Image (cartoon, rainbow, N blue to C red; front, side, top):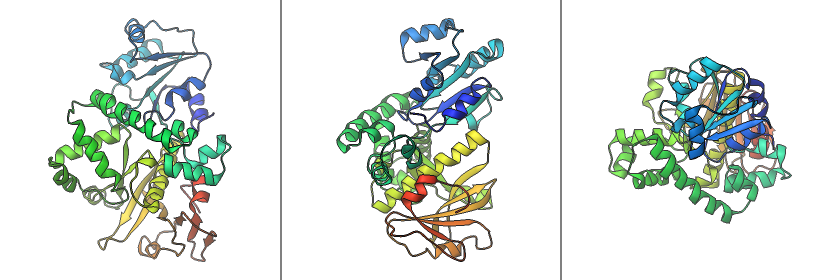
Length: 377
């Protein structure tokens, strides 16, 4: 099963250190081992492998060396920099991890200029259709109800998903979280996750969550950041041409696991579209080096468009998500009317796609998710 990052990772293998991050159990290790059959796999969680790392005694005749969970090692970035600066490549070096590595791109550090980062996402409809025998209806139903993590998606039953989720959540909160932070109030973080599950698609106030959990707003902000770093949720910020003003407005949070969402079919679909857009946005950033980003847009009267795609901070596509409403949203005319950009309404249950002389398009969710374009119709 070739994942969507196979080609890009293979092409870059001999150029820089490769950092492959993403949610736990989204397929990073499997993908890494598929890149080249001549590999050595070293996992920091295994005692015998930690000795290999301490002695730096892996097989340098291999084409590829994979370091898994290396971020758990003290001063791992400086250690890796030393290997790269002294020995260079080959063998190709690939570092994978489910947490903390994603902080890489946000701060300058000792590996600056020595790595390419790739973020692997769970399956979306476009990817699932490419390598399974499932049709669009089957793919859509599984993504809506079971999410896109490969194992439960491919098993295809709610019973398996429920058992998988218990193990998955425990690993994140009782292993990854403790590695990332000194947080000990796991129960309150579990409650925070439960609160977020029912607030998908709505602006989230740290002050409101602080009152619900009887914690300080700063603590809530810290926990939300941890959940982002652990790839449990991702944040979509409001768009404003004045960046300082945008930072003051409340963000929305979506789940990488669509089956975690509590709410109507429309809310679950909005989360699914958010996941697909983020995946394509980050693919364009990581593989092509393009400056795409995703926001939502909202005015003082509470009217909004669910998603705005920008390129180099310029609006290029508006996307509104509905479950059944085939009537074009009037909000398309309220936002950025002076901009020449694509406007698409994505509908879960739609008898027929349609387009308008003014350029707007109403499209079925299955058609939209099978392609996921950041530009154009």
